[in-house]
Structure formats: C-alpha cells, structure tokens
Image: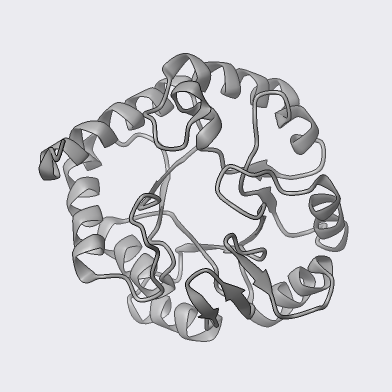
Length: 239
C-alpha cells in the first residue's frame, strides 16, 4: 500500500540504521525503484529524495552519497543540497540502452558541480552502464583509462549488465591493471561468497541486493545479512 512520504522516510531510516550498525564505511541514497528509468528525472523525484535525506540527516553518522538514476545533473544538485560526500552516475561514454541513446556529458556535470561550490564532491564514474551496451568498441580497460585522463573521476566503478548481476572478474582485473593509482570499485552483484575474491582485485565495492531480505533487491535490509557481509569484507581487507 501507498504509505506516502513518511513511509519512505521510515523505510529509509530502518535501512540506514541497519547499515550503520553493521559497520559500513558509507551509505548511498538512490531511487532504484523509480521505474521506468529516465535520463531527465522528474523534479519531484529529486525533491522527494532531498526531503527523505533531510529528515534522516541528524541520524547519519557515516559519509553518504547519492544517485538519481540516470541523471548526472540531478544527482549533483541533490548532493549539493544535502551535503553528500560523493555522487555515483554514468558520466562518460555512449550507449544503446533500454531508455534510448545514452550520451552523458562529464564536462557539463563537473562544471555544474563546481558552479555549486562543491569542488570537494567526489565523482564516482560507472564506466560500464547497466541496462545498456557500449557503442564504443574499445575494450573496457581502454575506455576506463581514457575516462580517467579526459574526465578526471575520483573513482571508477565496474558493473554487470543489470542490477544485482556481478561484474566479470576479468573486467575488474583488466580495469584495475591499467588504473593502479585510481580507486576501482565493483559496482553490482557482489555477494557474501564473492566479497573475498572481489577485494583481492578491487579497492572496494558498492553492495545492495546481497544485504536485503532473501537477497531480493526490492526488500528491506536484513540486519544479519548486513553484519555477515561486513564481517567478511573486513576480513578480506585485513581490518
């Protein structure tokens, strides 16, 4: 049933509490279920996310990021309004996607960030878009290396084909091998039984579905799954 804005706040609060209690390094607010996806997101979606984050702000004790799928400028605007530490999006490349032709503009996005006085906002570039196929036929590692030179991300993310689907380990290895001085994160599909292998290659990961009740993307965070995952992650990185 439709529980309105306060229902969204309550659900987000429960997830935030579980993630922070489990010891996650950071959290990210997104609109994953705001489907069908758009490139130019309705202002109401971004305003709603700002409202939810604002209501939760006093209880956020770790760095947080935002991602308004699939809209770089809205993501940056939300980050600036809420005091986010980082933003994740597709900022570079050219793709054929479920939503149509996908042609982000990293230059416009970063200049917009700077115009809002947020030069400190970390930019996490997903270089292998979900729900899409790259029209740039260079190998992924070459595209990632080129994006770092041309568009100066703070970190590079490698994804699978769809939410919850793992990035190929060969892709992670190839990208990290050409970017030894840039943080490279696995962006999708990391699970309890793969976090050790992922952390042996990548500098970190973004995880969502594996932490949910029954491992289902659309379910709430399961505190036990969250604790177990973070314990494995800490063991994998020796902390």
